[in-house]
Each structure stands twice: as C-alpha cells, then as structure tokens.
Image 1 (cartoon, helix red, strand yellow):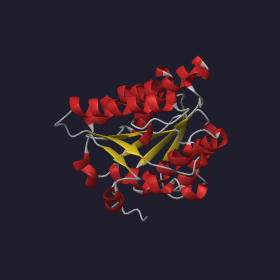
Image 2 (cartoon, helix red, strand yellow):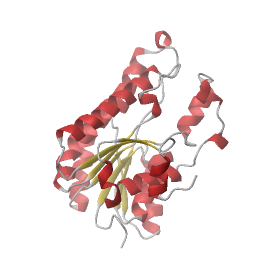
Image 3 (cartoon, helix red, strand yellow):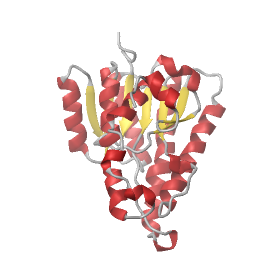
Image 4 (cartoon, one colour):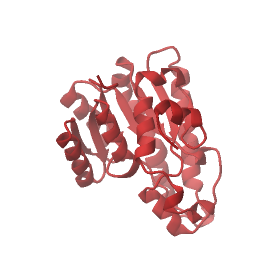
Length: 254
C-alpha cells in the first residue's frame, strides 16, 4: 500500500519544474492529484501522463493571486474527489529582478500578490478541508527568506513573509492533527533559474545547470513530508540543501 492511498492533493505551479515533478511524485504514492496553474495546457499534459501511468489526476486553471480562482479551485477539487488532504503552495515568481529603486511598482506588487498573498489565499480556502482530514500543507520556501540577495527585494521579502505565515499557522493550530511545513528546495534546474542566470545579478546568477538538482529530488522529499513518517516535523522550515538528515529520511541520494 502506497503511503498516500486515498488522499487528494492540490499542487499549484504544476505546469513545470518542481510543481509538475511533485504532482507525479504524489501520484506515485497513491494520491489523486489536482495540477493547477495559469497555463492549463502543460498541466493537462502532465495530468494525462499520470493517468496513463495508472494514477488519478486532473488539471484546473488558476491564478493564485485571485481569491475567486482559489475558491473555485478548492470547491471543484472537493466536488470531484469528495475531499482535500494535501496542499502544496508551489507557484511563485522571481521577477522583478533589479535594484529596488529601479523596479516597476506594479511588477513588485504582482510578486507580492503571487508569492505571498497567493499562499495566504490557498491556506485560507483549503484549510477547512485539510484540517478536518488531519491533512498537510507545504509552502515552498527559500533560503532567500532569511538571506538578502542583490536584485531580489520582492522575492526575498515575500519568501520571508511566507516563512512567518507557516509558523503562524502552526502556532495557531498546535496540538491538532493538521501539519504544515516550509520547504526550501535549494538550487533546482527550473525555468526560474534560467531567468536568474539571464539577469546576471548576484552570485546565484553565475551558477550553471550542473550546480543544480533536478526537480524530481525535491519532489521526492515533498511527497515524503506528506506521509505519516514526517509527523514529528510539523511547523518547521526544512532545507533540502542544509538538512542532510532530511534527505536521508526521505531516501534522496546526494
């Protein structure tokens, strides 16, 4: 029996990268998966791959910066599958990259809407279902939550906000069967990293694809965190790069 048999998971930013790999990892562990993103075509393709492999998956379009989209997404998930147990808040954006005084205020505000308010919307709308099922929420975090990087004022600020939001939800629900984590995947070979390299700003832009893990590695850890073996880690900010014990417990090789 797979560790997530009978569970229903919702993954945002699932059209590519860590989100798509996470949806497939969760399905491999037995969960029915909803893949959500603004770009529906890629989500639908990944959902079809999961279905062809014997799993259950659907794609639903969602702009995580819209509360109405979130409510429709959660309601549709519950209607189709009868429950919701897992939420992976993965959707995010690195732009605008640039010194704060040079950034466009509307782009900066959009980053806050997607990276921070979108996570709040997701937790707020999914929470009644997930708490009732003693479920799991994983907020994709970053080392940028506590380390400033030149040109990343919006990204660093929003990730810091998400880290505190994770702690607040854990604090307010201490003692319940519900769990929430912040997870920092480290350097992963995704489209976001291509944008960072193209910017040429700060040392991270000088890294190469060879310096990065593939999305399947953090996806495996995320799937493990959603299972029963991670129950003792509730409320923590966990790092793929820094916590070797986490990789060992999740069975992810170096």
